Length: 463
Image (cartoon, rainbow, N blue to C red; front, side, top):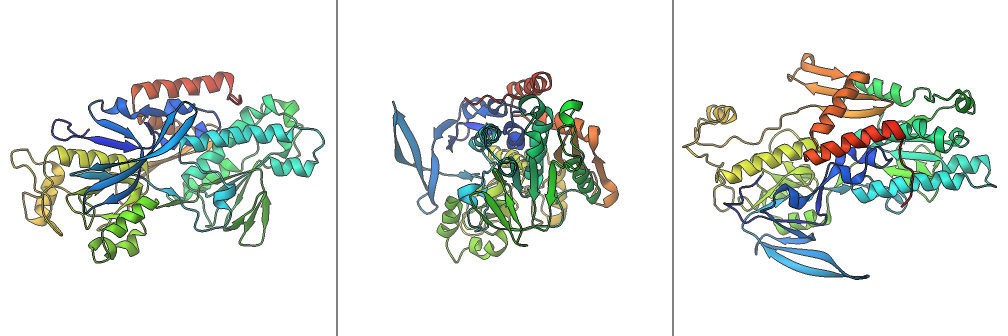
Protein backbone atom coordinates (compact mmCIF):
# COMPACT_ATOMS: atom_id res chain seq x y z
CA UNK A 1 0.00 0.00 0.00
CA UNK A 2 1.02 3.61 -0.54
CA UNK A 3 2.01 5.24 2.74
CA UNK A 4 -0.89 7.60 3.49
CA UNK A 5 1.23 9.42 6.06
CA UNK A 6 3.38 10.70 3.19
CA UNK A 7 0.71 11.13 0.52
CA UNK A 8 -2.87 12.35 0.38
CA UNK A 9 -4.26 9.43 -1.64
CA UNK A 10 -7.48 9.66 -3.67
CA UNK A 11 -8.76 6.71 -5.71
CA UNK A 12 -11.11 7.42 -8.61
CA UNK A 13 -12.96 4.44 -10.10
CA UNK A 14 -16.36 3.86 -11.74
CA UNK A 15 -16.74 0.74 -9.57
CA UNK A 16 -16.44 0.71 -5.79
CA UNK A 17 -14.78 -2.71 -5.75
CA UNK A 18 -11.73 -4.61 -6.88
CA UNK A 19 -12.46 -7.60 -9.11
CA UNK A 20 -10.50 -10.83 -9.44
CA UNK A 21 -10.94 -11.00 -13.20
CA UNK A 22 -9.43 -14.49 -13.80
CA UNK A 23 -12.56 -16.02 -12.22
CA UNK A 24 -15.11 -14.11 -14.32
CA UNK A 25 -15.50 -17.16 -16.57
CA UNK A 26 -16.63 -19.22 -13.59
CA UNK A 27 -18.98 -16.47 -12.39
CA UNK A 28 -20.61 -16.30 -15.83
CA UNK A 29 -22.00 -19.85 -15.45
CA UNK A 30 -22.58 -19.87 -11.70
CA UNK A 31 -19.54 -21.83 -10.50
CA UNK A 32 -18.79 -18.92 -8.18
CA UNK A 33 -20.89 -15.90 -7.25
CA UNK A 34 -20.01 -12.35 -8.27
CA UNK A 35 -19.65 -10.99 -4.76
CA UNK A 36 -17.22 -13.76 -3.88
CA UNK A 37 -14.60 -12.38 -6.29
CA UNK A 38 -15.04 -8.68 -5.47
CA UNK A 39 -13.74 -6.65 -2.55
CA UNK A 40 -14.81 -3.08 -1.70
CA UNK A 41 -12.22 -0.39 -2.46
CA UNK A 42 -12.74 1.11 0.99
CA UNK A 43 -11.74 -2.20 2.59
CA UNK A 44 -8.30 -2.20 0.97
CA UNK A 45 -7.04 1.05 2.51
CA UNK A 46 -9.53 2.79 4.78
CA UNK A 47 -7.30 5.88 5.04
CA UNK A 48 -7.36 6.55 1.29
CA UNK A 49 -10.19 8.68 -0.09
CA UNK A 50 -12.43 7.10 -2.71
CA UNK A 51 -14.55 8.85 -5.36
CA UNK A 52 -16.92 6.85 -7.55
CA UNK A 53 -16.54 8.28 -11.02
CA UNK A 54 -15.02 7.79 -14.46
CA UNK A 55 -12.00 9.79 -15.61
CA UNK A 56 -12.84 11.31 -18.99
CA UNK A 57 -9.87 13.60 -19.56
CA UNK A 58 -6.44 14.30 -18.10
CA UNK A 59 -4.62 17.59 -18.68
CA UNK A 60 -0.92 17.05 -17.88
CA UNK A 61 -0.18 20.77 -18.23
CA UNK A 62 -2.58 21.92 -15.51
CA UNK A 63 -2.37 18.58 -13.66
CA UNK A 64 -6.14 18.28 -13.72
CA UNK A 65 -8.39 15.24 -14.06
CA UNK A 66 -11.94 15.65 -15.37
CA UNK A 67 -14.38 13.00 -14.15
CA UNK A 68 -18.02 12.04 -14.59
CA UNK A 69 -20.21 10.44 -11.95
CA UNK A 70 -23.73 9.05 -12.00
CA UNK A 71 -25.74 10.75 -9.25
CA UNK A 72 -29.01 9.05 -8.32
CA UNK A 73 -31.80 10.23 -6.07
CA UNK A 74 -34.87 8.09 -5.86
CA UNK A 75 -35.64 6.76 -9.34
CA UNK A 76 -33.91 9.55 -11.26
CA UNK A 77 -30.22 9.65 -12.17
CA UNK A 78 -28.12 12.43 -13.67
CA UNK A 79 -24.53 12.78 -14.85
CA UNK A 80 -22.38 15.13 -12.82
CA UNK A 81 -18.92 16.37 -13.74
CA UNK A 82 -16.14 17.20 -11.31
CA UNK A 83 -12.42 17.96 -11.47
CA UNK A 84 -9.42 16.97 -9.36
CA UNK A 85 -5.88 18.29 -9.27
CA UNK A 86 -2.87 16.11 -8.58
CA UNK A 87 0.83 16.29 -7.78
CA UNK A 88 1.49 12.71 -8.85
CA UNK A 89 -0.89 10.55 -10.85
CA UNK A 90 -0.90 6.76 -10.95
CA UNK A 91 -2.75 5.83 -14.13
CA UNK A 92 -4.16 2.29 -14.13
CA UNK A 93 -7.44 2.36 -16.07
CA UNK A 94 -6.86 -0.95 -17.85
CA UNK A 95 -8.11 -1.57 -21.37
CA UNK A 96 -11.31 -2.28 -23.24
CA UNK A 97 -12.14 -5.16 -25.54
CA UNK A 98 -10.61 -4.77 -29.00
CA UNK A 99 -13.09 -5.46 -31.80
CA UNK A 100 -10.52 -4.76 -34.57
CA UNK A 101 -13.22 -2.76 -36.40
CA UNK A 102 -15.18 -5.90 -37.31
CA UNK A 103 -18.82 -5.02 -38.08
CA UNK A 104 -21.45 -6.24 -35.63
CA UNK A 105 -19.18 -7.13 -32.71
CA UNK A 106 -20.36 -4.35 -30.40
CA UNK A 107 -23.98 -4.84 -31.42
CA UNK A 108 -24.31 -8.61 -31.07
CA UNK A 109 -21.44 -10.02 -28.98
CA UNK A 110 -21.03 -10.32 -25.24
CA UNK A 111 -17.72 -9.44 -23.61
CA UNK A 112 -16.10 -10.81 -20.46
CA UNK A 113 -14.21 -8.04 -18.66
CA UNK A 114 -16.54 -6.84 -15.89
CA UNK A 115 -19.09 -8.26 -13.44
CA UNK A 116 -21.89 -6.80 -15.58
CA UNK A 117 -20.64 -8.88 -18.54
CA UNK A 118 -20.67 -12.09 -16.49
CA UNK A 119 -24.18 -11.34 -15.23
CA UNK A 120 -25.46 -10.76 -18.74
CA UNK A 121 -23.88 -13.97 -20.04
CA UNK A 122 -25.25 -16.02 -17.14
CA UNK A 123 -28.76 -14.68 -17.73
CA UNK A 124 -28.49 -15.19 -21.50
CA UNK A 125 -27.48 -18.85 -21.12
CA UNK A 126 -30.60 -19.65 -19.10
CA UNK A 127 -32.76 -17.51 -21.43
CA UNK A 128 -31.59 -19.51 -24.44
CA UNK A 129 -32.32 -22.87 -22.82
CA UNK A 130 -35.80 -21.72 -21.78
CA UNK A 131 -36.46 -20.33 -25.25
CA UNK A 132 -35.33 -23.58 -26.92
CA UNK A 133 -37.65 -25.49 -24.58
CA UNK A 134 -40.77 -23.78 -25.96
CA UNK A 135 -43.07 -25.94 -28.12
CA UNK A 136 -43.33 -25.58 -31.87
CA UNK A 137 -39.65 -25.02 -32.65
CA UNK A 138 -37.89 -27.05 -35.32
CA UNK A 139 -34.76 -29.05 -34.50
CA UNK A 140 -32.68 -26.72 -36.65
CA UNK A 141 -33.97 -23.69 -34.75
CA UNK A 142 -33.21 -25.33 -31.40
CA UNK A 143 -29.71 -26.19 -32.59
CA UNK A 144 -29.09 -22.57 -33.63
CA UNK A 145 -30.43 -21.19 -30.35
CA UNK A 146 -28.23 -23.53 -28.31
CA UNK A 147 -25.03 -22.90 -30.25
CA UNK A 148 -22.59 -20.95 -28.10
CA UNK A 149 -19.82 -19.23 -30.06
CA UNK A 150 -16.60 -18.20 -28.30
CA UNK A 151 -14.44 -15.93 -30.44
CA UNK A 152 -10.82 -15.99 -29.30
CA UNK A 153 -8.92 -19.02 -28.02
CA UNK A 154 -6.70 -17.31 -25.48
CA UNK A 155 -6.96 -18.07 -21.74
CA UNK A 156 -10.20 -16.09 -21.32
CA UNK A 157 -11.98 -17.76 -24.23
CA UNK A 158 -10.80 -21.28 -23.36
CA UNK A 159 -11.66 -20.94 -19.68
CA UNK A 160 -15.15 -19.69 -20.51
CA UNK A 161 -15.71 -22.52 -23.00
CA UNK A 162 -14.51 -25.00 -20.37
CA UNK A 163 -16.74 -23.58 -17.63
CA UNK A 164 -19.71 -23.62 -19.99
CA UNK A 165 -18.95 -27.22 -20.91
CA UNK A 166 -18.93 -28.11 -17.19
CA UNK A 167 -22.32 -26.47 -16.77
CA UNK A 168 -23.77 -28.43 -19.68
CA UNK A 169 -22.28 -31.77 -18.57
CA UNK A 170 -22.97 -31.44 -14.85
CA UNK A 171 -26.16 -29.38 -14.64
CA UNK A 172 -27.69 -29.80 -18.10
CA UNK A 173 -28.88 -33.38 -17.43
CA UNK A 174 -30.75 -32.20 -14.34
CA UNK A 175 -32.45 -29.15 -15.87
CA UNK A 176 -32.59 -29.69 -19.64
CA UNK A 177 -32.10 -33.41 -20.44
CA UNK A 178 -34.07 -33.31 -23.71
CA UNK A 179 -32.21 -30.27 -25.02
CA UNK A 180 -28.65 -31.51 -24.61
CA UNK A 181 -28.49 -33.06 -28.07
CA UNK A 182 -28.91 -29.60 -29.60
CA UNK A 183 -26.14 -27.89 -27.62
CA UNK A 184 -22.91 -26.95 -29.38
CA UNK A 185 -19.89 -24.92 -28.26
CA UNK A 186 -17.84 -23.49 -31.12
CA UNK A 187 -14.48 -21.92 -30.34
CA UNK A 188 -13.41 -19.66 -33.20
CA UNK A 189 -9.75 -18.65 -33.48
CA UNK A 190 -7.99 -16.72 -36.27
CA UNK A 191 -4.63 -18.43 -35.68
CA UNK A 192 -3.70 -22.09 -36.02
CA UNK A 193 -3.42 -22.82 -32.28
CA UNK A 194 -5.10 -22.15 -28.95
CA UNK A 195 -3.62 -20.79 -25.72
CA UNK A 196 -0.68 -19.15 -27.48
CA UNK A 197 1.33 -18.41 -24.27
CA UNK A 198 1.52 -22.13 -23.41
CA UNK A 199 3.95 -24.82 -24.52
CA UNK A 200 2.89 -26.92 -27.52
CA UNK A 201 2.39 -30.06 -25.42
CA UNK A 202 0.00 -28.20 -23.12
CA UNK A 203 -1.86 -26.74 -26.09
CA UNK A 204 -2.41 -30.27 -27.38
CA UNK A 205 -3.66 -31.32 -23.94
CA UNK A 206 -6.16 -28.45 -23.96
CA UNK A 207 -7.43 -29.51 -27.41
CA UNK A 208 -7.86 -33.09 -26.16
CA UNK A 209 -9.78 -31.93 -23.09
CA UNK A 210 -12.06 -29.59 -25.01
CA UNK A 211 -12.92 -32.09 -27.74
CA UNK A 212 -13.22 -35.19 -25.55
CA UNK A 213 -16.41 -37.22 -25.56
CA UNK A 214 -19.14 -35.68 -23.45
CA UNK A 215 -19.14 -36.89 -19.84
CA UNK A 216 -22.65 -37.52 -18.46
CA UNK A 217 -23.08 -40.00 -15.62
CA UNK A 218 -26.74 -40.88 -16.24
CA UNK A 219 -26.80 -43.59 -18.98
CA UNK A 220 -30.43 -42.80 -19.81
CA UNK A 221 -29.65 -39.19 -20.67
CA UNK A 222 -26.42 -40.20 -22.39
CA UNK A 223 -28.52 -42.48 -24.60
CA UNK A 224 -30.50 -39.47 -25.83
CA UNK A 225 -27.41 -38.11 -27.57
CA UNK A 226 -26.42 -39.09 -31.13
CA UNK A 227 -23.45 -41.47 -31.45
CA UNK A 228 -21.37 -38.87 -33.28
CA UNK A 229 -22.29 -36.07 -30.85
CA UNK A 230 -19.51 -33.51 -30.27
CA UNK A 231 -20.17 -30.86 -27.67
CA UNK A 232 -17.16 -28.67 -28.46
CA UNK A 233 -15.75 -27.85 -31.89
CA UNK A 234 -12.56 -25.86 -32.54
CA UNK A 235 -12.60 -23.69 -35.65
CA UNK A 236 -8.94 -22.72 -36.10
CA UNK A 237 -7.54 -20.51 -38.87
CA UNK A 238 -11.00 -18.94 -38.95
CA UNK A 239 -11.03 -15.18 -38.70
CA UNK A 240 -14.33 -13.37 -38.20
CA UNK A 241 -15.32 -10.96 -40.97
CA UNK A 242 -18.71 -9.89 -39.62
CA UNK A 243 -21.15 -10.67 -36.83
CA UNK A 244 -24.84 -10.55 -37.69
CA UNK A 245 -27.85 -10.93 -35.41
CA UNK A 246 -27.93 -14.73 -35.56
CA UNK A 247 -24.92 -15.62 -37.74
CA UNK A 248 -21.15 -15.22 -37.54
CA UNK A 249 -19.46 -14.82 -40.92
CA UNK A 250 -15.93 -16.19 -41.20
CA UNK A 251 -13.17 -15.17 -43.61
CA UNK A 252 -13.28 -18.57 -45.30
CA UNK A 253 -16.91 -18.06 -46.29
CA UNK A 254 -18.37 -20.29 -43.59
CA UNK A 255 -21.37 -19.05 -41.61
CA UNK A 256 -21.91 -20.12 -38.00
CA UNK A 257 -25.46 -19.75 -36.59
CA UNK A 258 -25.43 -18.93 -32.88
CA UNK A 259 -27.60 -18.11 -29.90
CA UNK A 260 -24.87 -16.48 -27.79
CA UNK A 261 -21.54 -15.08 -28.96
CA UNK A 262 -18.79 -14.23 -26.46
CA UNK A 263 -15.96 -12.07 -27.82
CA UNK A 264 -12.62 -12.74 -26.12
CA UNK A 265 -10.22 -11.73 -28.86
CA UNK A 266 -7.93 -9.11 -27.35
CA UNK A 267 -7.61 -5.71 -25.66
CA UNK A 268 -7.61 -2.17 -26.99
CA UNK A 269 -6.96 1.28 -25.45
CA UNK A 270 -9.69 3.32 -23.76
CA UNK A 271 -10.53 6.76 -25.24
CA UNK A 272 -9.18 8.53 -22.14
CA UNK A 273 -5.80 6.84 -22.70
CA UNK A 274 -5.67 7.95 -26.34
CA UNK A 275 -6.59 11.50 -25.27
CA UNK A 276 -3.80 11.53 -22.69
CA UNK A 277 -1.25 10.36 -25.27
CA UNK A 278 -2.39 13.16 -27.57
CA UNK A 279 -2.16 15.70 -24.73
CA UNK A 280 1.49 14.81 -24.16
CA UNK A 281 2.30 16.29 -27.58
CA UNK A 282 3.42 15.12 -31.01
CA UNK A 283 7.03 16.09 -30.31
CA UNK A 284 7.33 14.20 -27.02
CA UNK A 285 9.13 10.93 -26.46
CA UNK A 286 5.66 9.46 -25.91
CA UNK A 287 4.69 10.13 -29.52
CA UNK A 288 7.94 8.63 -30.79
CA UNK A 289 7.24 5.30 -29.07
CA UNK A 290 3.62 4.92 -30.24
CA UNK A 291 4.46 2.74 -33.26
CA UNK A 292 5.38 0.01 -30.77
CA UNK A 293 3.15 1.06 -27.84
CA UNK A 294 0.06 1.05 -30.12
CA UNK A 295 -2.30 3.18 -28.09
CA UNK A 296 -0.82 2.35 -24.69
CA UNK A 297 1.09 4.76 -22.49
CA UNK A 298 4.80 4.20 -22.96
CA UNK A 299 6.66 4.15 -19.65
CA UNK A 300 10.33 3.88 -18.75
CA UNK A 301 11.87 1.12 -16.66
CA UNK A 302 10.63 2.82 -13.46
CA UNK A 303 7.00 3.06 -14.73
CA UNK A 304 7.25 6.82 -15.36
CA UNK A 305 5.17 7.93 -18.34
CA UNK A 306 7.40 9.23 -21.12
CA UNK A 307 6.75 12.92 -21.69
CA UNK A 308 5.38 13.36 -18.15
CA UNK A 309 8.21 11.91 -16.10
CA UNK A 310 7.98 12.16 -12.31
CA UNK A 311 4.37 13.35 -12.49
CA UNK A 312 2.42 10.54 -14.15
CA UNK A 313 3.08 6.83 -13.61
CA UNK A 314 1.25 4.00 -15.31
CA UNK A 315 0.84 0.27 -14.87
CA UNK A 316 -1.25 -2.62 -16.14
CA UNK A 317 -2.91 -3.12 -19.53
CA UNK A 318 -2.97 0.60 -20.36
CA UNK A 319 0.84 0.87 -20.28
CA UNK A 320 3.82 -0.48 -22.18
CA UNK A 321 7.44 -0.51 -21.03
CA UNK A 322 9.24 1.24 -23.86
CA UNK A 323 12.69 -0.22 -23.25
CA UNK A 324 12.90 -3.97 -22.96
CA UNK A 325 10.89 -7.04 -23.89
CA UNK A 326 7.07 -6.72 -23.98
CA UNK A 327 5.21 -7.85 -20.89
CA UNK A 328 2.05 -9.99 -21.02
CA UNK A 329 -1.26 -8.19 -20.40
CA UNK A 330 -2.08 -10.13 -17.23
CA UNK A 331 -3.17 -9.36 -13.68
CA UNK A 332 0.13 -10.88 -12.49
CA UNK A 333 2.13 -8.13 -14.23
CA UNK A 334 -0.15 -5.34 -12.97
CA UNK A 335 0.01 -6.62 -9.38
CA UNK A 336 3.81 -6.70 -9.38
CA UNK A 337 3.97 -3.25 -10.98
CA UNK A 338 1.62 -1.88 -8.32
CA UNK A 339 3.73 -3.26 -5.47
CA UNK A 340 6.92 -1.94 -7.09
CA UNK A 341 5.55 1.57 -7.67
CA UNK A 342 4.12 1.81 -4.13
CA UNK A 343 7.53 0.87 -2.75
CA UNK A 344 9.25 3.58 -4.82
CA UNK A 345 6.74 6.22 -3.73
CA UNK A 346 7.02 5.20 -0.09
CA UNK A 347 10.83 5.41 -0.25
CA UNK A 348 10.71 8.90 -1.83
CA UNK A 349 13.14 7.84 -4.54
CA UNK A 350 11.34 9.42 -7.50
CA UNK A 351 13.31 12.53 -8.39
CA UNK A 352 11.95 15.83 -9.68
CA UNK A 353 12.97 17.37 -12.96
CA UNK A 354 12.02 18.53 -16.42
CA UNK A 355 12.20 16.63 -19.69
CA UNK A 356 13.89 13.25 -19.62
CA UNK A 357 15.14 12.75 -16.04
CA UNK A 358 17.94 10.66 -14.73
CA UNK A 359 17.13 7.29 -13.13
CA UNK A 360 15.64 7.49 -9.61
CA UNK A 361 18.17 7.66 -6.80
CA UNK A 362 17.88 5.26 -3.88
CA UNK A 363 18.01 6.16 -0.20
CA UNK A 364 21.64 5.59 0.80
CA UNK A 365 20.66 4.83 4.40
CA UNK A 366 18.80 1.68 3.41
CA UNK A 367 20.48 -1.62 2.72
CA UNK A 368 20.72 -2.39 -0.99
CA UNK A 369 18.40 -5.11 -2.32
CA UNK A 370 19.81 -7.88 -4.56
CA UNK A 371 18.18 -6.24 -7.59
CA UNK A 372 19.77 -2.89 -6.71
CA UNK A 373 23.16 -4.55 -6.34
CA UNK A 374 22.84 -5.98 -9.86
CA UNK A 375 21.73 -2.58 -11.17
CA UNK A 376 24.66 -0.83 -9.46
CA UNK A 377 27.12 -3.27 -11.03
CA UNK A 378 25.55 -3.03 -14.52
CA UNK A 379 25.37 0.79 -14.52
CA UNK A 380 28.53 1.39 -12.47
CA UNK A 381 26.48 3.58 -10.15
CA UNK A 382 25.65 2.56 -6.59
CA UNK A 383 22.86 5.11 -6.17
CA UNK A 384 20.49 3.96 -8.94
CA UNK A 385 17.20 2.35 -7.95
CA UNK A 386 16.60 -1.05 -9.54
CA UNK A 387 14.15 -0.82 -12.48
CA UNK A 388 10.97 -2.87 -12.53
CA UNK A 389 11.60 -6.52 -13.29
CA UNK A 390 8.72 -8.88 -13.95
CA UNK A 391 9.00 -12.19 -12.14
CA UNK A 392 7.03 -14.73 -14.15
CA UNK A 393 5.31 -16.91 -11.56
CA UNK A 394 3.68 -19.05 -14.23
CA UNK A 395 0.47 -19.20 -16.24
CA UNK A 396 -2.66 -21.24 -15.61
CA UNK A 397 -5.75 -22.17 -17.59
CA UNK A 398 -8.79 -24.27 -16.71
CA UNK A 399 -9.76 -26.77 -19.43
CA UNK A 400 -12.89 -28.32 -17.94
CA UNK A 401 -13.85 -31.57 -16.30
CA UNK A 402 -11.61 -31.04 -13.29
CA UNK A 403 -8.54 -30.55 -15.49
CA UNK A 404 -6.25 -27.56 -15.88
CA UNK A 405 -2.90 -26.50 -17.31
CA UNK A 406 -0.03 -25.04 -15.31
CA UNK A 407 3.25 -23.76 -16.73
CA UNK A 408 6.09 -22.33 -14.66
CA UNK A 409 9.37 -20.99 -16.05
CA UNK A 410 12.06 -21.73 -13.45
CA UNK A 411 15.03 -20.86 -15.70
CA UNK A 412 15.10 -19.03 -19.06
CA UNK A 413 15.87 -22.12 -21.17
CA UNK A 414 13.49 -24.87 -22.29
CA UNK A 415 14.73 -27.31 -19.63
CA UNK A 416 13.72 -24.89 -16.91
CA UNK A 417 10.02 -25.15 -17.72
CA UNK A 418 7.81 -27.01 -15.25
CA UNK A 419 4.49 -28.19 -16.68
CA UNK A 420 1.39 -29.63 -15.06
CA UNK A 421 -1.86 -30.89 -16.55
CA UNK A 422 -4.92 -32.95 -15.67
CA UNK A 423 -5.66 -33.30 -11.95
CA UNK A 424 -2.22 -32.00 -10.96
CA UNK A 425 -2.75 -28.85 -13.01
CA UNK A 426 -6.26 -28.56 -11.58
CA UNK A 427 -4.93 -28.67 -8.02
CA UNK A 428 -2.38 -25.97 -8.82
CA UNK A 429 -4.98 -23.86 -10.60
CA UNK A 430 -7.40 -23.97 -7.67
CA UNK A 431 -4.78 -23.37 -5.01
CA UNK A 432 -3.23 -20.40 -6.84
CA UNK A 433 -6.60 -18.80 -7.65
CA UNK A 434 -7.69 -19.23 -4.06
CA UNK A 435 -4.55 -17.73 -2.53
CA UNK A 436 -4.50 -14.81 -4.98
CA UNK A 437 -7.91 -13.54 -3.82
CA UNK A 438 -7.87 -10.00 -2.44
CA UNK A 439 -8.87 -10.90 1.12
CA UNK A 440 -9.55 -13.81 3.47
CA UNK A 441 -13.22 -13.02 3.05
CA UNK A 442 -12.91 -13.68 -0.70
CA UNK A 443 -10.99 -16.90 -0.11
CA UNK A 444 -13.68 -18.19 2.23
CA UNK A 445 -16.51 -17.25 -0.15
CA UNK A 446 -14.83 -18.77 -3.21
CA UNK A 447 -14.09 -22.01 -1.36
CA UNK A 448 -17.71 -22.13 -0.16
CA UNK A 449 -18.99 -21.52 -3.71
CA UNK A 450 -16.89 -24.40 -5.04
CA UNK A 451 -18.23 -26.63 -2.27
CA UNK A 452 -21.85 -25.62 -2.96
CA UNK A 453 -21.43 -26.22 -6.69
CA UNK A 454 -20.04 -29.72 -6.10
CA UNK A 455 -22.90 -30.63 -3.75
CA UNK A 456 -25.94 -28.83 -5.16
CA UNK A 457 -24.91 -27.83 -8.69
CA UNK A 458 -25.10 -24.38 -10.26
CA UNK A 459 -28.05 -22.10 -9.61
CA UNK A 460 -30.04 -21.21 -12.75
CA UNK A 461 -32.47 -18.87 -10.98
CA UNK A 462 -32.98 -15.59 -12.83
CA UNK A 463 -33.41 -12.76 -10.34
